[in-house]
Image 1: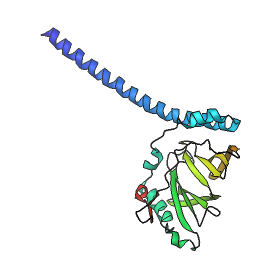
Image 2: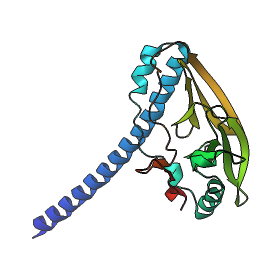
Image 3: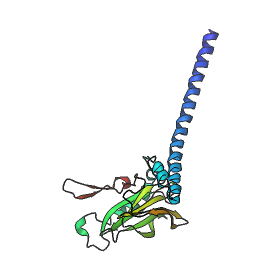
Length: 226
């Protein structure tokens, strides 16, 4: 009887140990996956800056981030404040004559490193005058901290480091990183290409929350802010 009791206790202890080890290993894999994305992005940027586009392309293809946790960490007050800003703009293309043009999209990404997303609102009438208003949440309100030119510009996820900016037009392309530091927007240029048919850029662009129905009417997805 004592031997059976000992075996039961031993087996139970081993099962608990296996569960603990499995949990730690899984968390380690998740952390490694996130680190791998940022490491690959850093390698891409450095090779792009050095003009080694073959290696930059190699690392760009490895970038497969699926989720941005900074959006999930937004509080109800932050979402409400951001929704109020986005709702001011119409996505209707027929409203191109309105003062601020139409909404070309809004983006959510952690720009200042607090693990909660900032709001980027892109609007205008065409690529020539598109601009992005950048907001953060401070003292219970959405506070605009900058306005940047946004024609022919896209944003790529770079968790914990801001966003990668990709500007491309007619065979010319430039890549940089934009973030918020001490309440101000700062940008770092990582080089450019000219007279090329293929842009060496990451393709995991941030969601602009714009879609189209069967009649090509623009629809805005407000669900991340609701």
